[in-house]
Length: 88
Picture 1 (spheres, rainbow, N blue to C red):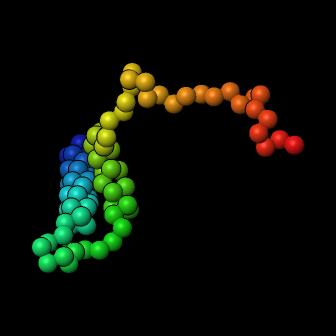
Picture 2 (picture 1 turned 90 degrees about the vertical axis):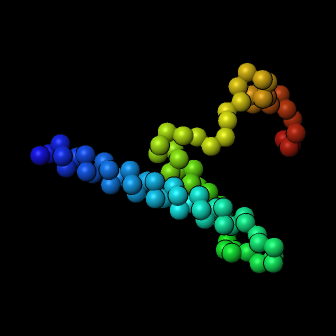
């Protein structure tokens, strides 16, 4: 009986995650879409919605973008211990 309730809880959780993912993806799409008449359907800053979208993707184990490794784009560590700039 307890196992059945856990499965139902997992289903509800997955359905909610998918609903949030679909909603945020559609809002992002609508925020960038501009019909021929030049009037946007929705007009808002999509930054918050993009963070919800990437968070909901992460809940499924997916990442937006690619990590660059092995091609020289690693951050460079600079030793500033002997730098006298700004010191009086």
